[in-house]
Image 1 (cartoon, rainbow, N blue to C red):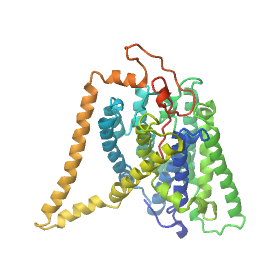
Image 2 (cartoon, rainbow, N blue to C red):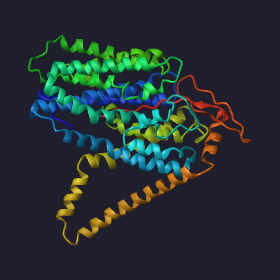
Image 3 (spheres, rainbow, N blue to C red):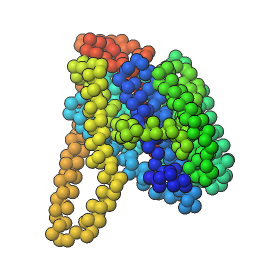
Length: 462
């Protein structure tokens, strides 16, 4: 929900600089998934999204309660559904269909992955399957990246109820203390569960171990509301804020450039430290006196940030369908250009023709048009709707038939193992070694004995 401009001095309003921060974060994730060695910590872009999301979601709740005296949870969840579900449903129609038609080596587990995505439990589904986040043989699951969307949606469902109840019963200060305690508890729990020199996927996927960013973002929204202040800030406030913001932005860049996913530090308080840095940066960006916000509010960054959810949704399957020298005869920057073109194109189509129409009430207008249509117009409306739903039905039927076929194909498992190099042509088992570094995709020369190490992140949506 967009409120009045922040210049009105009473509401947070739309903050383009936060979309700019999203653009920086999603760019880090995409560059990381391209396996560029100079950004080993790009996977932490998702933690930045978690903090931004926690802040914005809580700010909406706080502002609604402040101005109207109550919070409509139904309205909150309706807005979240309009924002998140249309693009996800489109992805869950197109990606399985493409997989079943052209990439059947990745089709074996699609049924469970799609159901888990629809229920927003993808992260727990991966834990249940003991699916490594960091080491994948052959083609990684094309919907593996939806784990972080599951973390966010679980937060969106539970947190507003608990937050509104706490705020009404315990007051602002005690609610703040509970949120801080929750963030610390999640951090400690991650450190307890983490075992050095073993696969950390369990602590990486778990909602219980990834709450610190979301909760600290919520704390910031609860205690930091400079847009409400009627006092005129001193001349020194702006420069102090800008210097603080630049230092925080530099610290985020340091995390991106210096930290990798296998360092024990990140699982023993590193995520919490990054969360603190990000809330400082957000606090600066939303302050009316800060000029740093203008830097992150430049049009190209805002354009990408507004579409960051769609960019994230589409980039991972596109990357998995364009493995270098296996699916496409490209590597390096030419491959990057191809992937970015496909990703931005798919994201823009989704944003322009699916997400925005639904958010702007296209379904409601169709309903109203039907109610007011005369006898001559209704058949035309019916025909248009039937054509669209007929096409949708054909896609769903094709996906369902393909899933059934993939699940019952007796050769499926053998084909997957052969593609991954797990068995030889004579049926003998081949050794698969785990990757030990950032994500790397097999080339044609090493496709039969290389394990792909992957990290999949999702931008948070506020």
